[in-house]
Image 1: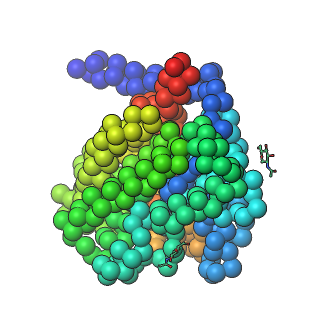
Image 2: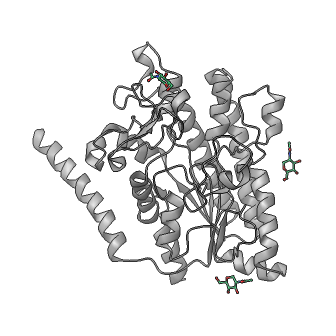
Length: 372
Ligand SMILES: *[C@@H]1O[C@H](CO)[C@@H](O)[C@H](O)[C@H]1NC(C)=O
Ligand SMILES: *[C@@H]1O[C@H](CO)[C@@H](O)[C@H](O)[C@H]1NC(C)=O
Ligand SMILES: *[C@@H]1O[C@H](CO)[C@@H](O)[C@H](O)[C@H]1NC(C)=O
């Protein structure tokens, strides 16, 4: 029994080393001409800071490339590096040459339009108009600068990689904040997924062929959720991870429904390659066995924050007075109580490229296209 377990652990560790080793040893071919990214703060590489500079009191002063919600690079940065492209410029940086890609993602962005939240009395949303459909309008503007004739644009986008998400996490968190019940939050899921599929189809209609669609993170494992919705009832927590089950159940439902919708989309559009990219499973693995991945401080405690059991304090969150930053960010999964540190982002990016957490892995998508 014990021996079996030891072998399983050794295999898991060897797997990690293998992922790291192959990425270093065997660079991917420079296959894509550009990367276009859409989403929220998990992939924002500067838009929020540019859009709000001068408007909000606590905006950081530093310009891109530092304006990310992390201590370093995000998954989208590691994807760009792996494919031999420059880090994606934020689309709000007008006058930039976007011929190798643009990043439309903005912190706080939702899959649904502002109108949905207003109509449903969800007032906790920030006053930003940066939803998925707005990002697609920005894409139309950037398009004018990177290609001219419809033929030329289709050709150009057919050789680009599109990363569409993460979307939905903010939609659900605004609803939780407005005290919606689990049943009511779940009614949003089909709408969010349909909205995403509509957005992806718009890109396919522009000539996109390779689209990576990240699912939701396990919201119930994130320090802000664990702090805001802390419960005295131990049965609300998953004993294997310490995460709040209710918030994870919505993420799981979203991801399951998204995968079904993406499979259907793939069948409708056989010339495209639609990749589902999984944030959820690796994050749960970190939460179950953080030491196996090098996260000595665990998965549920933020590196940068203002105290409390998860080192998340709303009135002293990372960047505000009262917050401190840990000495060892690589030993933490969570950077600021919401977003991840660079170490897990690097790990997740590698698993999306080589497997096992993308379906199919990006390296095989590229390889298939080069063979045929
Ligand atoms: C934009 O960059 C591409 C290559 O990165 C280059 O070929 C092109 O000439 C540049 N366009 C402008 C307007 O500078
Ligand atoms: C949001 O922005 C888009 C495009 O920039 C605009 O068409 C729309 O009217 C705006 N919506 C609101 C609610 O401000
Ligand atoms: C949260 O931060 C505020 C402001 O710095 C502080 O007064 C409070 O004690 C902190 N709460 C915890 C639980 O650390």
